[in-house]
Length: 494
Image (cartoon, rainbow, N blue to C red; front, side, top):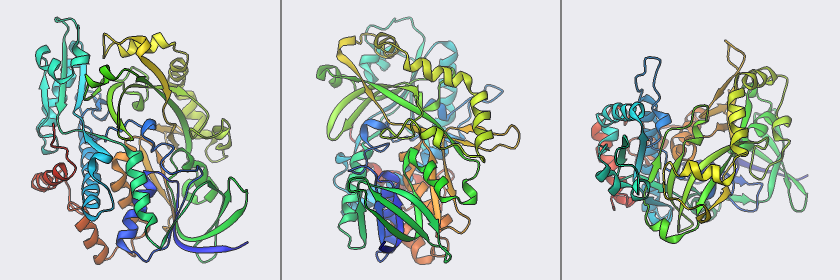
């Protein structure tokens, strides 16, 4: 069997692989890069516009990023970190527009105000404290707060239409929030990479085997899903950015760092509005609080979207129970992922999260009218016939060993890398695509540290002006970079 030797193999045709490939190509155009995708097109799983929230998760409106501690106080550290990381993505995209690697911004990102909306005395008090703490930080400068029904009616007319005038409600708003079509973004990044002689895209190919060679490289066996023919790629570095499929691939690598990891798959669905007149009346992402026992990715939101250039109005997502790791995966995925080294953590998480499992199953069992009643908490006048159910993407949350109780479930992303830096995998989901630039910079810093010389750092600084500095601590730097990104990306438009 012929062996093709390359520098970097990117497994998965989503936003993570596309971002890493773009960065590496800019840092060293001589690197031979190959991207392999099991489907017949890139950006068709988690990255597809219909399979994620497209919020540009900046922490502006997602209330789960500002939890309350044991004393009932709102904590904002995670929201600050996520917001700062999202700014890095904005900087990179702005630079890529300037270099011609990305098209005009309206092709993948559009201004959409980010709103947090709550009702009831307790929730209003929570949102008020959240606003006071966040708005005092430079990262959240420009956030607005109101309990005034007239003001809120201007911000979100569908939500306020025919709502009880005496209802205790509150909302915060960031006017320059964004809606990101990560599918379009990724397709444009990959198209730009395809123009490079040193880049190859292999569609309809899946990884069947990963073997470490004596010289520290990887022989990766790929199978063509159409012809069933196999080929071997010999790569100096392998990145597993395959969304829910990253865990099984990490297990195939058999690196020590993969031991103990498991996955908790969660499915999702949207209610999609079919009425153009209704769609025109709402222009915002309105996020509420998740139901008790719901996973973070199930935070309800009435969501303006622009997918493949066409406006849409979505509500959800409604989480569900599944054993598939990918939307186009197998119902055996969960069972095939069980190993001796992760059995105890997975059993422990299963026993300690029965309420979550019951909640997910109950979500699946809902009727259309049940789902519509949830929607009517955000859009009281919603008409059932104007909304249909559509499948969203699959997510695989992280299960890992925990010294105190054997295993824990985490709702976030985690980079797992071999100690020699020859392989890395990105596990988990939220906030996912929004922080792709920072996540892929971390891959470079951890796995290619010997190449991260002054020249690479200088180049990264040119593409990402805040590289090497803290946007959380440096308000002046944030002011300069945000002014540029909002202008280049057209996010200052109302």
